[in-house]
Image 1 (cartoon, rainbow, N blue to C red):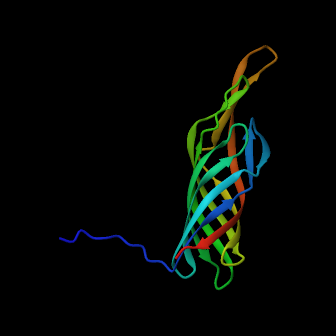
Image 2: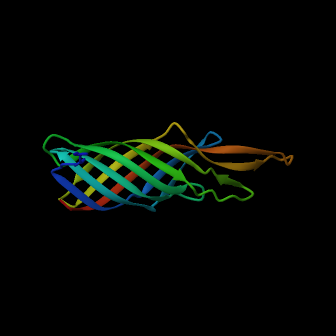
Image 3: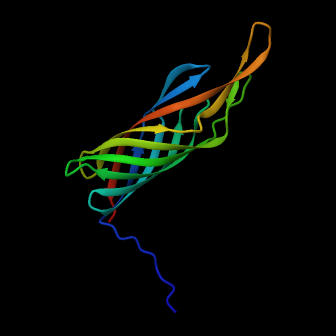
Length: 176
């Protein structure tokens, strides 16, 4: 009896790594701020089942400051724009916030946050590509701070992620 075999046929399979410097747009107590981190490192696997369309999987780690950091796993679809070297990107990225340093002033929240992502990229040659992606989520709270008023009363203010802007530099080599 034949059980069956699942195969994936593609024109191209690539494997490599990415570096993603990141700008985080944060809000706390109705005040917005930006935080930059160069510490986004990922592996990448790209499968191109048909010309002009590819699926990319990115496991990695993002260290975004005192209260934001952890492992990430993203899956993205890339569409080439006509016959150019530019492409559009849509995807989902799951961030597991595990950087919850707790001290008297506050702490990060240990939780998973799902981001919706949109971007544009440029394929320089067969190995090197660059992209710019914007990530947004409905689950915005990632940390809290303890605030004391002049009377010594304590209240907590949540830190919220308004959005994340990532610049990706990717090197990926053809496997198949």
